[in-house]
Length: 200
Ligand SMILES: NC(=O)c1ccc[n+]([C@@H]2O[C@H](COP(=O)([O-])OP(=O)(O)OC[C@H]3O[C@@H](n4cnc5c(N)ncnc54)[C@H](OP(=O)(O)O)[C@@H]3O)[C@@H](O)[C@H]2O)c1
Image 1 (cartoon, rainbow, N blue to C red):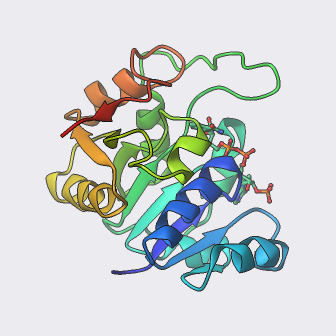
Image 2: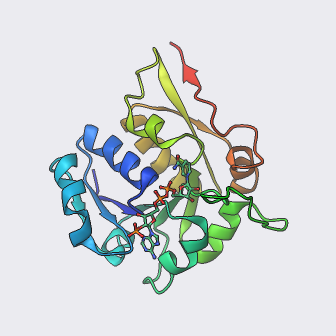
């Protein structure tokens, strides 16, 4: 399995890295403060997860982005051309501590994120559950925990669907970004925070 990039090492970035580590999938994880600030975290996670720079994380074929909404422009600025690499958008347009929804006009949050990563193939995923439901055993509730994903590029979506499957979740393809990302968007969509389990 190719190394996965992770930009953002907070609750969601760590939860995703934990899920990858559980399956022995390699990843490079980055925050805003540099890899040395992540050495304790990656030591806990085991040998397949390493700390890197934002550029190193962004250079991977699949890059999950999980950054506070207002910090996304800075986190994604000045990176080399995305050149068709896959960006997994795990972000929601709301922020602690006020949890006040951020106005987006007619765009979904993923359409806004897509505008920050030109030439990337964006797949929305890993944004609709709380972090502990991503890091904990996806079979822990008696079936396979459901993860939704959506995007406009069939191959990119297939890659993310395969990864979701490898992590032990049950992936459900919600169609194109304009539809799927609105269904899982928090706040506003009907699906966030539902911990659904596929039985059998
Ligand atoms: N928490 C949840 O349960 C949850 C669930 C679903 C979706 N989400 C969404 O996921 C995203 C991340 O949420 P979170 O709870 O994981 O946030 P968080 O715990 O506050 O972590 C945010 C991460 O972003 C990093 N970051 C900020 N600016 C950066 C930059 N310029 N370059 C690289 N990294 C940067 C921070 O690094 P530093 O610490 O070095 O600043 C930190 O590691 C948000 O959009 C949120 O809405 C969260």
